[in-house]
Length: 341
Image 1 (cartoon, one colour):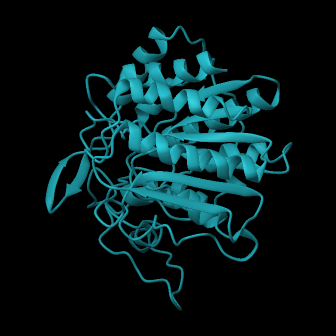
Image 2 (cartoon, rainbow, N blue to C red; image 1 turned 180 degrees about the horizontal axis):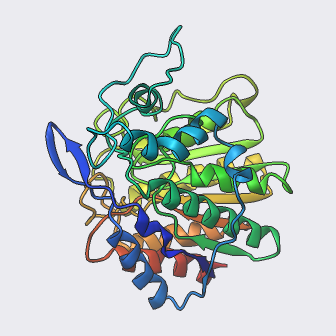
């Protein structure tokens, strides 16, 4: 399996992370990609450079105002003259009957749901590289590859059409799915990150052409807290095209595999032409965010079950944070897929 990667992710190096009132170094660090690269090397995966697709794929998913904000944000922030080293919002306006702000501080609040997506001088470049990586992987699959892995950083599945949150700025998985839609009537997204893919759900919630399925730790007790419940099924044309499977905290391999089987039935019934896997590795028993307890052999089983769907597949890297076995878990899930194929 080919893997798409760019060193440009290093331009995004956030520092700020607010956890229960305590400021810490974020877990979304450039070192994540280094550890994932070790996993790719162990699996003998060929690295491919991304194609620069420009704004087109991003504009299929994100609003013009939001893309303009992300592109201009750092320069406008720096021009304030008394601003900090990262853009951290101090307001999150309720949008009901609100007026879109013109001041950069107002726009920062408007386009974020939380403080965990700090913007620095290289964030736009890194996030654009991630969207190109996801789009390149999708294009390779459209051109005939059976499956391709996209090492995207920063991740994307918490990003809405016009909102950043949870380490995410642009929704790489949604962008890959929208690109696949150029040749496939229906596309499915299977999100196996420990967190609910709330941004992806929001982007496709009223659409019937993209099925969104998310298996994640129960949001009653876990981020993002207000999205990801089983009763969220879509609306309008998208009613029934969204499936959330929340799991009790600390669920392990067998519990996970049981619901993955249910997710597979839903995907088969939808009959998509291609599949995007939002590949969070933070369901690991050793992940610092400690939501679920999937083992390395468990990740191999996950990869094998995904392979049995028999669909052209784009793996888009989402979460998965610093642990000694992060790379091993990536090797395992891709090996499981390849061996079962």
